Each structure stands twice: as structure tokens, then as C-alpha cells.
Amino acid sequence: MSQGSRPVCLIFSADPAFHDAVGAALSGLDARLERGNDAGAALSTLSVWPIRCLIVDLAHAEDWPMVVAKLRRSPDIQSAPVLFVADSEQAVDDLLAAPPEGHWDLMRQPLHARWLCAKVGHLICTELRVARSAAQSEAQLAMIDALPAQVCVVDAQGNILMGNRAW
Image 1 (tube, rainbow, N blue to C red):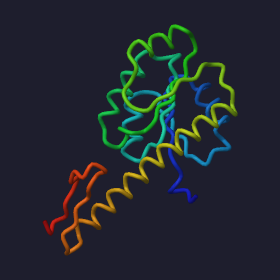
Image 2 (cartoon, rainbow, N blue to C red):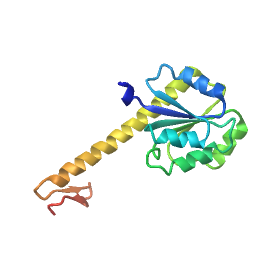
Image 3 (cartoon, one colour):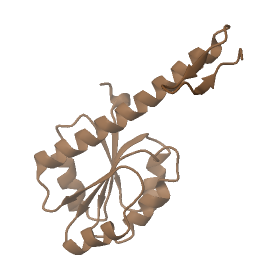
């Protein structure tokens, strides 16, 4: 992939050692890693790069899940998967008590580099497949809509799901 098309992972943590550990673990992944030490840094990164995955350290800031919930309201990050990394049973319990919206996963510390890399790689691939599928569906609907003849899309029960402009 070219430098511009590499998927971007945003790492939320107040701990520089966590950023370094995640960066080292994901060095084999063809992804750009952006660091967010606070919500302001996260928002500025969103305006520059399309985020494909979030990695959130639950150890050093209790409000990261709330920041992620707020960021989910942004169309740019709404569907991006989130990997929460917990350092204690209490962090796991707190997260599971009020699970976040959308696609997310959970890991415990200490980080296992190959496991983290495989998990993040899978989350990115899944998100890219979903985005590609949505784009293909939109393109197909646009083609159907542009046809001059009357066309309708029907489900298995015979219900009309969509008709093109010629209708």
C-alpha cells in the first residue's frame, strides 16, 4: 500500500510507555499509528486522517470510554472498531457494566505483541471490508437508479425494496 492509503490506528493513552509498547507490537502491521494523549488530540487527528481502528488504554484515564462514545457521534469514526486494553478486573467490570456502542473488543495487559498485532489486523480488515461493501452497494444502487428502463429490486418474498427514477 502507498503511504497515503495505509489504514490509521488511533491510540488513546496518557502513558507514553503504552504508546511505545503498542507501536512496537504493531510494527509489522502496514498501518499508520497516531497517538492521542487527550480528547483534543484525538479530535485533531480525526480531522486529518480517516481512522480505521481505535486502541484505548483503560489504565490511566477512566474517561476514555466516554470520549469514545462522544467520538462515535462523528460520521468519520462511527463504524471504526475499538480495542480496549484493560489492566485490571475492575477496568473490565466497569467497561462491561455499560458496554459501548458499535464494534469493539477487549484485551488484558500485559500485552502480548503477536496477539495484539493479529487482533488489530483483524479489526482493521473487518472495518475495511464493511466500508468496501457499503461503497459497492451504493454504487450498485446508483447504477440501477441511472437506468432509463423501469427497474425494481425485490426481496425473496416479492416485496419491492427499491425502484429506480424511471418509476
